[in-house]
Image 1 (cartoon, rainbow, N blue to C red):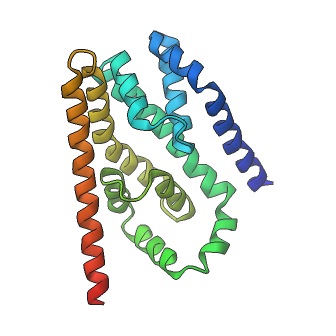
Image 2 (tube, one colour):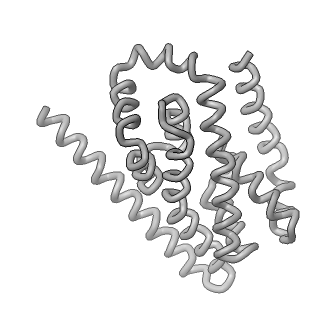
Length: 208
């Protein structure tokens, strides 16, 4: 029953977001109090399924509401969706997933590391997204990580990304080249960090 309810909720969220995304974007661009809550809702939906790429959505929100308010709105929506994903994973799919994980020792090994160094592991994954955010949410939900640790590490880790995207969006109307360049530099930085991590891991594997 828990699996069925959890799966139904996730499916409902994705279907609603997919069919209503154009209307939601239109209302968000109008500004005002209602659009603030709709922005949070759409960001939360995108945590479950990226019906709109998050960089584009955060940029739109930043352009409509400005940097400070845009960051607050995007962060609130992202954390609402992230915690929803976390709790659905923990209480809806945990038993089923644990049965499957037993077959994969490497995943169990990572879960053990996560349980021992949860805050830093989650914070690193948020700062340097070499692992997709949805996978981090799922693994943490299936682990023994405390929800408060997950919440605090995820919130701190998401701030730099959201801040840059909101600032780039807010700057787009006044200076498009600067806005695109800022976002491009940020993506290049993330790419290079990921490349270094992958290279170092491959070198370690060759030595072993």
